[in-house]
Amino acid sequence: MILIYTHKITPRVRYIFKHIFTRTLLTPVDFTTKVEEFVAHNGPKLSYTKSPLGNEFFVKSNDLLFEQGVNDMEIIIQKWDEVPCFFKTGPKSLLPYDIFAASFYLISRYEEYLPHVKDKHGRYTAEQSLAYKYKFLEKPVVDIWAFKLLDIFKEKFPDYEYKEREFEFISTIDIDNAFAYKHKSLVRSVGGFFKDLFNFRLINVWNRFAVTFNIKKDPFDTFSTILQVQKEKNIKTIFFFLVGDYTTFDTNVSTSKTKYRLLIKEMQDYASVGLHPSYFTMHNPELLKKEKIRLEHIVNMPIQKSRQHYLRFSLPDTYQNLIDLEVEEDYSMGYASTVGFRAGTCTPFYFYDLDFEIQTPLKVFPFALMDTTLNDYMKLTPKQSLGRIRDLKNEVKAVNGTFITLFHNESLSNYDRWKGWKRLYDSMIKIGLV
Image (tube, rainbow, N blue to C red; front, side, top):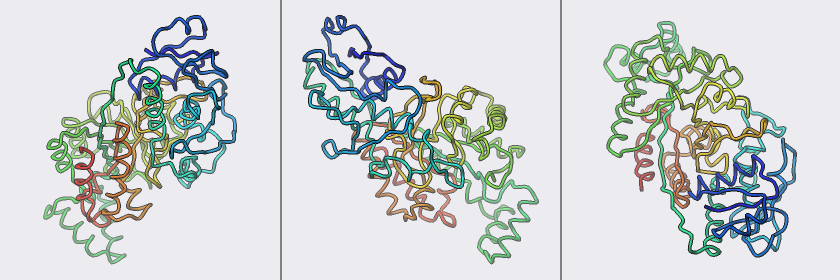
């Protein structure tokens, strides 16, 4: 156990030290404000305050962890052995930067509480983030800083036994459209047929006809393939099902269709199932509740995992709504427009609510990349995408973090704009397991 001395034990101090030491470095910590207790402690210890007490492991503290609320602040990015960092300390500090305050700034998503311009879907954009502006979005800097801290700590306390965490890979699949043509209402099917015909999409017309009359399998029905890969490679897989009512942005099959309900139940038998809250749930807790209850009635068990459709969430409101509904895990933490680590980490963390200054029970699982980001936003080919995926995975593997990917069942169809992406998924799985 590492004893932390600080002049004031705030919720922020307790939260970030436990995240870095306990959840990232697997080392328990305790806190004290009593100098005599700190001096008497024989094990490894660290002081986090304005000036050292003696010759201990001292890190000069930034004010951020002792404040309340959100304030605009000037942040100067510098390099710590080629790794971007901020909140510079001073000559007496054994760390050149206050990585605890810097980590809290990124993980709490402090910058998302500051005034910002939202995109057309009401989302905070990557381009406004510190990580994007200073080109460290594709590095899990919080984890990198933690392990640099550990190296220096080991020099000071070489006899202490440190545990090492294991790399983990999680494949997540969003089900925005379970089927391309099957099990749609008559109005949608006929409307889709004439729309394809009017736009001279004759291949789509033929495919729609062939699927409807059981000549061909529905192209988006890739579930058996995903389950086969999961079984063969023993991969942790989570399916997020969209069960909201039809809107312009939510076009999945209706849950009134028996085939769709059976599909959800079948996936529940072989993998984890979570909720994919529809587009308008971001500011609508009643709609979120309705959809959660709907999915729970289908699977006959509590739903504890969630990922927002279109990655539409607003802090802290959306997360507060999930907490009120006793959702335990959220997988929305990432950007639609670019790959990387939105919260600066590849380690799952508990959401810290800056409104109430508390650590909440909602655990956030940040993902590193999404198929539509690579294909639609970044305009990368499957081959180019594989290179980016490999780079991101190597960054996570270097710190033994959790590598989470986001694909859709339709991107494994090799259909239309997804030609070649099934092979990419297979290659990604191989990379993820190495």
